[in-house]
Amino acid sequence: MKPKIIRSEAEWRAMLSPEQFRILREQGTERAFTGPHLDEKRLGTFSCAACHAPLFRSDTKFESGCGWPSFFATVTPDAVIELDDRSHGMRRVEIRCATCDGHLGHVFPDGPPPTGLRYCMNGHALTFTADAEA
Image (cartoon, rainbow, N blue to C red; front, side, top):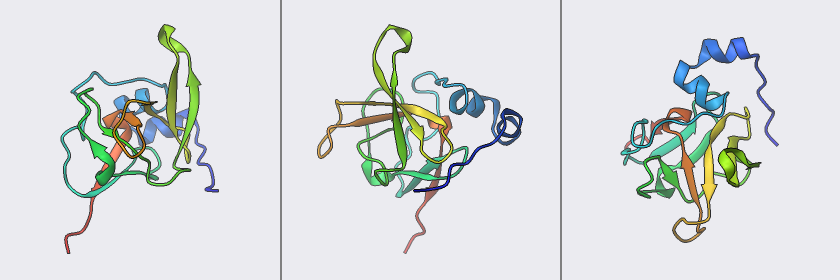
């Protein structure tokens, strides 16, 4: 199990942009079709913008039409944690970074094979590192 990263609110505020802080630490969301990484098509890894833990590989990214970067699998089963979210008058499954507990988005059971999952992530909660070209 990976060690948890714990920081104070002031430390997170100093490290993150205001939009990243709002999303990652205050469970916010960006407007659909406005965040970064939606159109990213290069091979590489999407990581947590707060702690840089790897979360998703680009070969699991797909165009869902929802307006947020979507993936059908995490990089490892323990990369994220799932929490019951009953906000906004509905039941959803919130996804958080397992390393720093940052809010990333939600997962839905309407994705493509092989998992049938759609990890709908806030682009501001992610960073992208392209693979080195061979």
